[in-house]
Length: 301
Image (cartoon, rainbow, N blue to C red; front, side, top):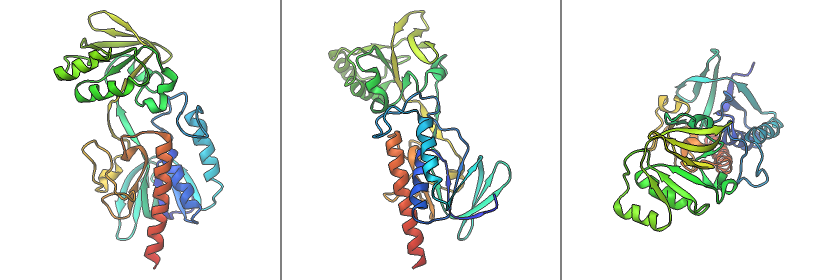
């Protein structure tokens, strides 16, 4: 790539990054999108709750988005991994794995998060297919099915309440001694939600579609879907390297304009919110692009 200097570099070329790139491309900005090609939902067979794209594969949505963003000639793409970043006086320098250097006035992290999956045999293979995190994205497809939640304590209680909207055939697996209060336990039982404290050994599945929970005592429980919210970390370490503040949940802290704690750096998409969905990622990326364009205009005046 001959061009090395840009007005905006976007790290992360999935839904949020591409949405920001379109907003900036339509604002006539010189933009580089750097993407390593490993979106967190690459194993998910279908994306839902995104109007006009309901039921499409994540890959199909991304491909169509990239094709449309590519129409704007001031937007360029770089396939590779950004491994280092340095803040200069009035710019940012990004280094890629292959050793190339690019600079920009503004920087957007749309890099998403990495799920830290529990060490349960079969969990990883089922993740995003029949082991789910969001009922708004996938709950309709498994409505009224035998469903388990793997969680404990306050999260388990609130998660069970939420998922009970989609199915009444529901069990809460605390995967060890319950941390629910006696009052919480009674409320769930009053709503027909079974609480299982036995530790989980594995998930029986066929190509990612779960059939049974297998417990360490040898017992099995038939399920068609499991909900879980694994711990997470930032998919990309560069925001922290540049000094961007994180929240207690490990998300990039932003203000109402998508600005991070470091001037000139913005963030959008899953890296900034617990509400992980394609529609919200697109929305935040579009807004971040407009916000960066406005800041660039203001600086010219």
